[in-house]
Amino acid sequence: MKNFSILASHVLVPPAMAAIMDDDSATIDGFLAAGHVCTIMGIQEYFPLVTKYKIPIVITGFEPVDLLQGILMTVKQLENGICALENQYSRVVLPEGNPEAINTIMEVFEVSDREWRGIGNIPRSGYQVKPKYEPYDADKKFDIQIPKVAENSDCIAGQVLKGIKKPYECPMFGKVCSPQNPLGAPMVSSEGACAAYYHFSNAIEQITEINQA
Ligand code: SF4
Image (cartoon, rainbow, N blue to C red; front, top):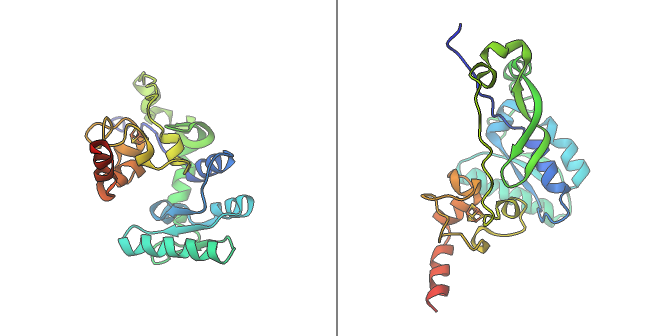
């Protein structure tokens, strides 16, 4: 088949969580691990993070009640002074994930370094197409030149991702930066922290009131 190509931009979640926790300035108390990722990858790769960083990780689904329960489970762990890996999304996520899908991923991709917006390069945090499948690798096939886009110096996405600052503490939030004109990754996707605050908190109203005072 010659008309099929892959431009691999897949990322691995645990190395990014480790990179955040390795930053001494990070103020993360617990993680809600993304349920859709665990549906494929299972839960095993999170145990070393719980052990190393002594932090609760709760695998959580996406319905509003899933998120509320995931937060509740995390808070209960913190209140009881324990840190464990729990699976709130057990109706979908099996401990072993989806072995057939994992085998296919391992067959086609190999682990590579990956650039993360707001954080920088994280070693061994992405997937690239294995040399064996190079004829399908769009990166090689089409001589693609992906220009390096410098991060906006006014964007504090890295601090938001590490829990150091809230989105509304960014001077750009709701003024220059909005879902219609995003300056950073957390404002681009609907589930990004800045976009969520923009849509669902009253931070915009508070900022407007402060500016009017
Ligand atoms: S509000 Fe915009 S500029 Fe500020 S951290 Fe979020 S994405 Fe970056």
